[in-house]
Image (cartoon, rainbow, N blue to C red):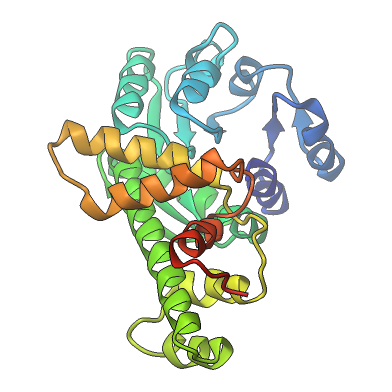
Length: 283
């Protein structure tokens, strides 16, 4: 994700300094004109706007607040944009620590996967103050197409969790519906074409539904990463005392795939859990 997003910033003409825990991943960016840094602290010292995208809450804390974290290279007036998907509560805590140094923060998680990152078509949901959002809008426009300021700090992360609830429940619905069609003797290709253009149509059906018909389980978004998001969803839901009945089922279905060692597959591989329940394979 970060590689594609950084490349689009380089292509847009921004002076970009990069750091990655795996140094070899920086090489295409350096060849394209970016400068390499030895730590997040060095990136921050060379930048006015610092963008991070890593896996989980603890990773963001390490990259921003750790001993070589970005906070130690910032100066008052700098802006940190975290585009990871993490806990809203952790985001607010990081914002407070940055604010104590006079550094502003936006939480701006993304949807669209590696393909969207490469093509600059990500959906970006941004939390933070309006003035800072407007200042950073050209940066967002280099990486995404649908850019929405959704509220104050932490709200970007909350809206991303909303997105992930919808993604998982829709994907389970697609898998169940196609398996129902298969067991009922319907031509799957014709069924998929018929329902994709109607009220049931949507991204998961059009894209991952088509992958299922080809038996393609390779990841656009890995199960291991979605399980992390499901954990964040359940933690945030507990904080606001919100029962999530359907999402709980989705979580258990993906946990069954984790038990089978399928976490490197794409989220469409939920069909494997549905196939077990149905006693039949889709294709």
